[in-house]
Image (cartoon, rainbow, N blue to C red; front, side, top):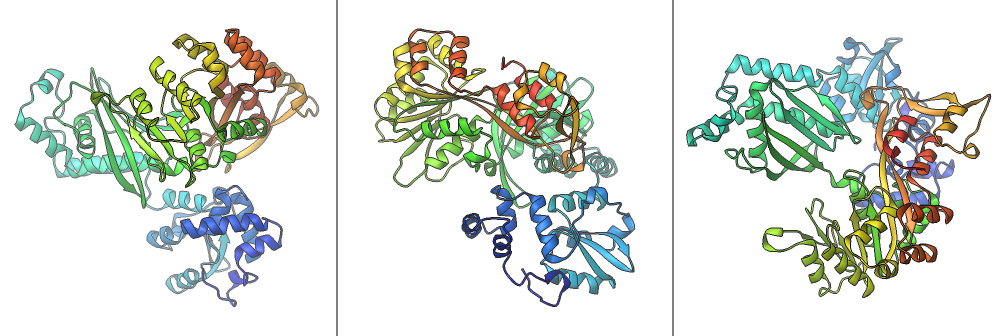
Length: 594
C-alpha cells in the first residue's frame, strides 16, 4: 500500500491498518496476530483475512476505513450511475484496481474504490481524466458487480446472442450435421466423428462453452446442467442448492456443444450410447478449478452434469460451519477421541464432505497418520494419505479399509458406508484403537443407528464403537447486501413450532429478516448457505436404548431429553438470529418432527 501523508485519503493512516484496529477496539491483539500469520501464508490483504476469519464483517471493515480515511462509505446499489460517467475511466483500469466512476459533483469526478490506500492510482486518474478526483468507499463485491453491469458487460443472454450472430455471419459449420436422430448417431463412421470434432472446435462453440463455464464460476454454482429436450435445450446452474435456469443456445448447436465438453474432459466423442465420466482442469479469473463431468444418454440426446470442485470451499473452520455451541462441544470431544466411529449423515449435497474435511484438517498434525478411502478423490489434502476406490481391480471401500489396518493409521476416513462388509471392518478398526470417520445416507441422526441394525450389525458392537452421529442439512443464507427486517404475527410463528420462550413478541409481532433481492444475489434474496447440525452423542442412556433395539423415534426422544438439538430446532435458531428465512426453514426441515 502506498503511503503519501499529503494525500487526503492517507490522513490518519500513518500506522498500519491492524494496529489502528486494535487501538480502536475493532479487533483484539490475538485476532490481529492470527490474521498476520495467515497473511504471511496466503499473501492476501489483511482486511480480507479479518473478514474471512469472521473477526469483523465486511461492513465493519468498510466503516472503519471510511472513518480513518475521512471519505464517505456508499452502497453502490443505491447510487444512480450514468453510462456517460462510467466511460470516463477505462474498463481495464476499473477491473485492475477495483474502482468505478459513479458521478460528477462540483466539477469533481466521484470514484468508488475498494482500497482507499491506493493513492497512486487516484493520482493517475486525475492526470488521465483531467478532473479532480473525489474518492468514496464501496465494497469490492459491489464495485465488481457494477463494472459487470455497466461495462460492455453484457448479460449472459446478450453475450450468447452476439456469439450466435457471429456464428451465422462466419459460417454454418457448427450446425452442419449436428441435428441428427439417434439411429444416425449410432451408425456414425470415422468421417462423421471428424466432422463432429471440427464442429466442436469452431470458435462460436468454444465461446459458448467458455461463457457458460465462466458464468457458473462467477455465480458460485456447484453444478452445471446441460439438458436436451425435443425442441429446446436447457442450461441450469445449481446455486446454493437450488437450480436456476440460464440462457441456452439453440437446439441445433447442442451436439457440437456436448462434443466440445467431451473433448475438454478427454472423453470419447463418438460414444453416445453408454454413460461416461471425466474431469476438466481450467483456470477462471486466475483461480485454478477442476470439474467432474458426467455424460448420460437420454432419449433426445446426452445430458451432461458438471460438478465444480473448488477446494477453497473446504478450508472452513469448525466454528464457521454453523454448529450450535452445545453441538459443537460434543462434536469436538468425539472428534478428538482416541478411538471409535463418528458418522456424518445426510442427503447428497448436504455438506458432509466439507464437515469431514474440516475435521480432518483440524486433526492433521505431523504426529498423526490420517488415511482416507474415497470414491472419487475430488480434493487432495496435503499431509493426508488418500486412496481412490477402483472396483474394476477389486479396490473397494472394504478392501481399502482392510489394507489400512496394516498401514499403522491413527485416523481413518471412509468416504461412504454402503454395505455390511465395510461397516463391519470399520467397527473392527474402531474397536482395535483407531478413530474412524464415515458417512451414511439417513434422514436424521437416530435413524443411522436403526440403519446399521438393518444392515446386520449386532447392537453390542454399535453401542461399544459408535461415538456420535451427526445429521446435517444446508439452508440458504440471507443476502447481506439486501437484507431487511420485517414483522410477522407471533401466533403464525408459534404454529410453525417455534417455542414461545425463544421469541421476542412486541404488539403481537415478531421481527424476522429476509432479502429484498439485488444484483449481488441474482434477485433471489439469498447468498451462501448455513449448516444445520443434529448431533447425537452415544452416551450411557443411548447405549442402553441400542442394546434394547429401540426404534429411531424412541432414540430421538431420549436424545432430546439429554439435550440433542434437532435439525428443525437448529433451523429455528438460525431463523430467529436473522440468518435464514421461514421459507428455507420449512423447505429444508419439512420432514423433521422437531
